[in-house]
Amino acid sequence: MVLRFAEMWRWQGTMDRKTYAIAGIAGVLVKFFLDKIAAFFFLQQLWFPWSYWIPLGPSARINALTPPESRFAAFMVMLALPFIWLGVTLTVQRLRDAGQPVWLVVLFFIPVINLLFFALLCAMPSKPLEPRRNEGAPWPAPRALGQFMPRSKMGSALVAILLTSVIGLFFVGAGTEVLRSYGWGLFVALPFCLGLFSVLVYSYHEPRSGGSCMAVAMLSIVLLGGVLLVVAIEGIICILMAAPFAFALAALGGALGYAIQLGYWGNQQTPATPAMMSIVLLFTPSFFGVEHLVKPQAPAFCVRTAIEVNAPPEKVWKQLVAFAEIPQPTEMLFRSGIAYPVRAEISGHGPGAVRHCVFSTGAFVEPIEIWDEPRLLKFSVTDNPPPLRELTPYAHIEPPHLHGYFVSHEGQFLLTALPGGRTRLEGTTWYSNAIWPAAYWHLWSDYIIHRIHYRVLEHIRADAERN
Image 1 (cartoon, rainbow, N blue to C red):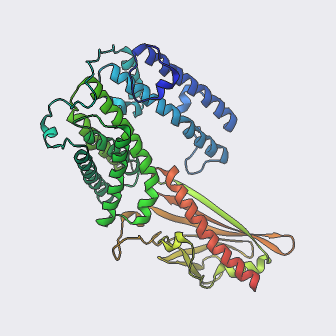
Image 2: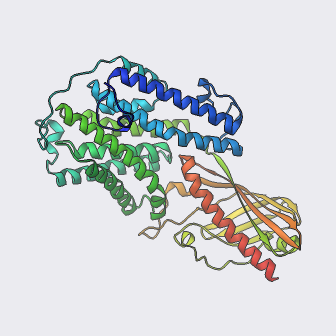
Image 3: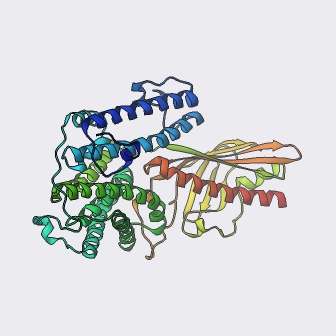
């Protein structure tokens, strides 16, 4: 069977083993060629098949990447996305052609195993499809679990959404309250599996349209977010921060569920309960378990923010060491509960002095390490207040991630004299964030720290220029 190029990107249809092997090998070669070009362009280095194990070199550290390494890593992630989509759609079509459960596509994401899986699919013969039923015809007689599933479109949708939300609540509670894990299991595996599971439940008795499958997958995530708010596990701000990533992964899981139910519809098979349940009940907790055992080290990040002040460094220095109370914030970010700086106090003078930067949630304790007046003030951070007050219907909630997950380690103010009696004032914060995927969450934390920097620096500039 010869497929047009556009058909290879679709969830529907089948693919024989010869076409699958040719398309798969061609995709790998094209990806490898593009990676070689990217490695030479960004890093001026050669790229080999074994480079995928250490893409940035053996000496690279994720918390200390150079700008070229960061750009290369970001480009590689973006470049991989269309090839991941192509690999999944090709594998789904090949599994359907071979008469195998489509949910086995999860093996595509497991290193080493996916190579053996590819070879196996290249060897498996096609299985003739049974005659298709007329559109609108029901599934074969239900078994066991199917007897409790409503047959109506509305009833099956409600059950899928409610059941998915209950399972999601259980895993969120177990992952955050018991294992104290805010990582790939919670923010990647769980929304993907919930989107997949909700569509499989929804389409248990008869095939459903793609649009309704996506609606069920999205509504399941919306209801889960509402339940987390009602039972006081999370606040509105954290739920909204996680929402874009969760919706994208739930949509991907829902698309896979739609492809699976199309396979059942075309082959006149009754949906298998193990295929539905194993994805959520085994795949998700395995991520939690691995993260809990491995305990990956939180990556460190650095945020720098600079402004120019129309005053000499001597006047700016007097304002930054300790500053008076800053007016109440008008930004929605801070008014929603994110911690914001209020004032700074200092005890002592020179190295060894202790600075207290008071925030809306408490005070950062900052022992001074370098006092180079009026050029550099550098300090460590020995105590961190909570990064936010959760916006919630209740008086107060205390999720585990408010303590020990978002931690500031060091900070400094650097003053550089400019012509005309002006000063370049730069604030820097070194921090770690133990919430994964780091590439997503550090976008939020970097933005918040930038806004905190600007609030302090603008206040210092106003006082220095006024005085």
